[in-house]
Image (cartoon, rainbow over all chains, first blue to last red; front, side, top):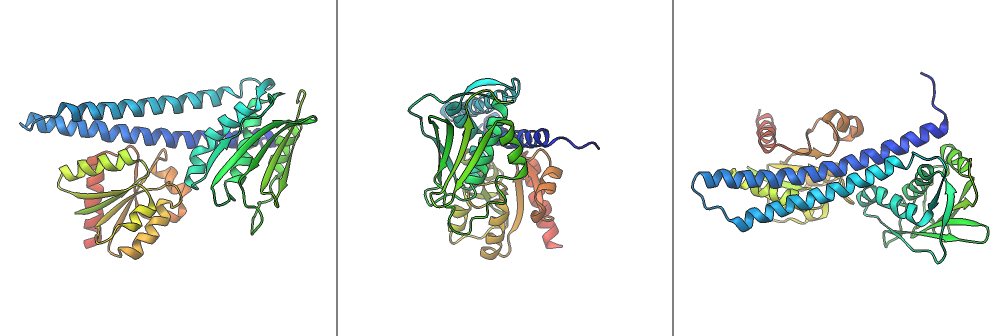
Length: 220
Length: 121
């Protein structure tokens, strides 16, 4: 089989990882809906056999189901937004908004490790012409690395900021000093993404920071 | 039959436990590995564990519970698309029983009975 190019392969892997994570989330909401609907059915079957049916109880179950439907709707909306992020290869995006959205996509993977993500609003706008999908892929990659080495607070902060020379996303809240295995980060695949977006990554082990540096102006 | 359900979705374990109780199966629940490990003074025939949970995964929890409750048997609940997907991604899980979410309660009970029958052979 002909090999995909590195960018295509990295992009597909990212897409697969996020889709799998979202499908797990949907499975969870379906499981909760399934149990609440099942209990409602159990109660009505018992009512048919003469047991008193408590309307407050039934209404409570219906409310729980509706809450899970709303939760599922939110998850699917995110999936839809994510899927459409590949529509345009070059677009002006708000880096803060992209960082927040990507953190949302990575939230489930973070929660498995007991890690949460928080975006800190920048003082100046952080808009850049770039590929929305591959910017998400790069931020996601930084979050994946960050969640392997959180500090005791277990919160990773994403701080987008505009400097005179560029736009950066600074990830803090890590303990990278002792026995941190960076697994070759950034890898060859990460480098391909960085080249595509004319970006760079700096890892500062002493400060426990990963900085994604985005060059302002049009990317290829 | 005494069952312990562990899943970080509280509404799932709470409701599933109630439905099992209605069917004459005594079920307790916990929403994390830590909570499950903190339960004292009980023994369980079966523990039904979610695979992906914060901090302690279902597979890690199984190892811990095996020490705490040596006679307990295990069934995993997974959010994977199919049992095959789960097996492919979780080599460590070995030959345990699995159910893909959402779980049909009748199939869960059937699986529990199978597990206990197999253990008594």
